[in-house]
Length: 381
Image (cartoon, rainbow, N blue to C red):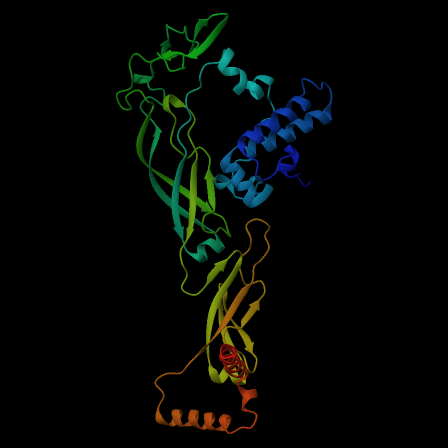
């Protein structure tokens, strides 16, 4: 089943900023929320659709992937296994989640502050054109904060239990009365966790994580290009005190190739031929990523002419369409000629110059010199 465009679902333009996305989402979420539409299956499905679109477009990384690859960025197989963009969406949302950013700062929340998720990381990797076309697995080592094995991420020595924070009574929040309002703020003693570690782990100093090299196998899919990114979920830095790890983004850079140039999903290469073949025609072999193939050069071929070979480019990672190979003909002037070869060329030159119809042999030269004559004639008028 074909999915609707996320921008159309929220009724916003593709240029919408975060504020416009949130405004559109809140309006539609209030309209179709299941609590307002009990036993209405259509409203429930519509709400899930709205929330899925919002969760993608409000996340800069997911939005970038969606703009570049469409829905295939989140489908199984669009990127395989660990290298897929995250396409999991939650359908359970209450009104406090929708409007929490508006009212949360005023009235507070009864929930503890969750341990902060670890930082996202980016790793730049350079691959060859052949690897980008055919796909490849790469092994990398990165220095990264990982969960402390000694305390298993708890931050407490020998796994000792933390104790409840006294100032906030374990809630992670303290109440301050201001006139008619009771305002909730994050407890500064426990930083909102509600717990205090009396005996911190001496290996990680109570943070629950240690920085050390980590080996990661990256599976790069077929068809990637420079500036494409691959997301490895939970492969970033470990969070403090056992919190969830961040994500790792692999930035792709494709090395310059000595034969081919890539433009979108097409390949281009220069093919030199001598002027005898250009004039008389013939067969030549040209390179492709799968080996050599023969093409026919017709008579009177001019330098710069493009020959298109269908299906010999790169398969699109987005729609699986195959690109083409374009061979650009470059006529090479011979060098290191011996006396006999030079005399043969002079004989050819005399033959052309003595021909009454010599202008037919060199039509570009004729047009060029006629253009020069007209240019100077116009200057003297």
